[in-house]
Image (cartoon, rainbow, N blue to C red; front, side, top):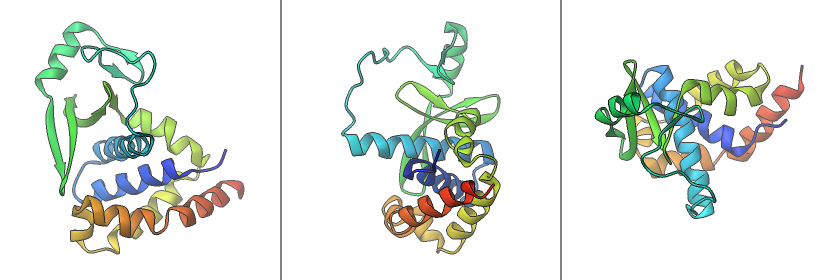
Amino acid sequence: MAVGRFQVMATLQAARAYILGKPLNSAKSFGLNRAIFYAAAKKGFKVMKGAKTPSEVYIAKKPISDEKLKKIQETFKVEEIGDELAYAVELGGTIYYTIGNEIQTEEDFKKQIEKRFEGKFKEAWKEAIKICKSYDKGVLLSQRYFYEAIYKSRRDELTNKWSELISLK
């Protein structure tokens, strides 16, 4: 299975958050969260058939108990990464980002992003870090500049390059 724009966005956004000081697990959560956000924005944020009620929260697609939900809700906050805002909660001392009643965890990142690289994610990660570090911090702090300068300008190049990387087994 090839690497797509979704995986490119998630990887670059995770690298961005990591360089801006987020711990690796939180950075991966943010990367997946932003990839989901941009995919939904592209489709117009349509309500999906069978959408869950706001009182239901999911971790790794599994519902959680009312007791755990209450503890999670107490940690709910809006996080800033530069000029970008995202909803977040704290689980076990780690900040995780949420969208559509689902908490994006590092396990979700592994399943939806790393798995597509078929064991070659570390190479793509190193490249994503190098790319993000090559830009001024002001570009990383700006949602618009990050999207235009880092992601949009090389999304197809990286999609092709990283897809070729996994075909070289």
